[in-house]
Length: 343
Image (tube, rainbow, N blue to C red; front, side, top):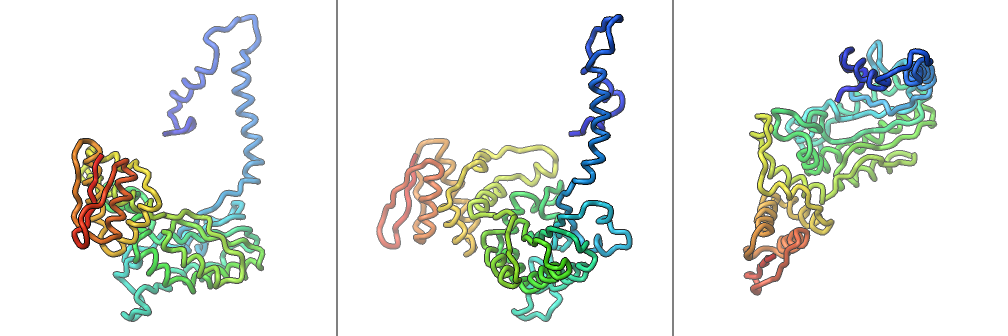
């Protein structure tokens, strides 16, 4: 939505006219509304001079080139707080291990030291009097984090699924523990130990080891101020991604899935944890199929008899039914044991 100053001149003036009275007595003074508008304009002009001096936003920098260029954009502002978005300009191949700069061995498969090395080389260009540096370690390039009109797997919910996947949450980040700690130490040394360093971004709960490991590699208090993608978030994202219509997004119109209401279900932690354990074994599509099957029961009468399976999957089926307000019982014995669901 455009702001007042972005509107065409004629429309903007018509809006200001709405503030003024419809009638005015000739013998009286200038309407107070007229004077108030002038005072607001004058007051804002005076205030903005002071505001520009005390404004200390968190300045995001998505490329080391921003710091090392001959005329860096980081000059001329109050650079007290900076966030380095470390993997924003990376490409998916590095994160999903399609490309590697090291030999094709298990020890080097997920190491891409050049990603952090570029930032490390740019540290001398940081202001030395900076007070706070955030290191955004979201393991996804910028284009994966937002909607794109023609790309299927981008933006939420695919972003949560990507960040939670093993290649991003464990393997990719696991290969950057040492160089991340080295980057943090170099920033601290450059600023004379007077800078507060924080870890930020969006990480899966499976990446908690990364935050802890980097913290152990630096001799400084370490705080994660970002967002965790929980198992429940991933379950909700998996369901939403299966219910979305790629053709609807490409054509610009919205097709409503009959089970679209599943996107608003608040999944319990127990359900999310059971899903995560099974999804790590490659059963994610099968689990979403269970959810769809049980969801159809919510709109009608009847009974759903699920096939026999492992104890963990039956536990997941029980938890899904509870979250959907359904009732379950177990039937059969031994290898024939299965879950029966009814309203």
